[in-house]
Image 1 (cartoon, rainbow, N blue to C red):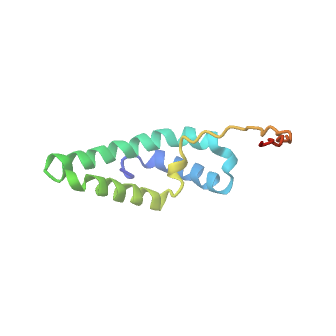
Image 2: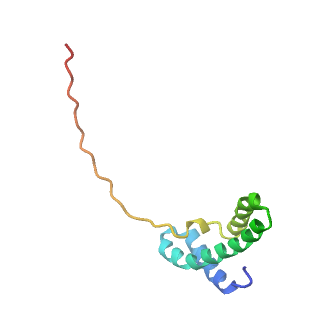
Image 3: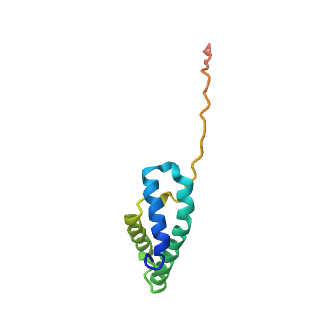
Length: 104
């Protein structure tokens, strides 16, 4: 996977390093990471498809987790590809009073 797509992964590695130092580069990281994640998912599908077809479907989930673990070893922030960060403001709530209830 890395050898066949070495150019794409080198470019993403540079962006990944920049993003790890400055998380305000989220949009750039998303753009650079989208094709990388699709490559990784393609290889994950290839790997898991063979194990499902050979009768080891119960192990496919663990295999996929191990595969993503290996990917995260090289790119620890790969899970943040596609994250959308929105600015929001918090409205100030005016204090209020509860009236006492008279019980007879």
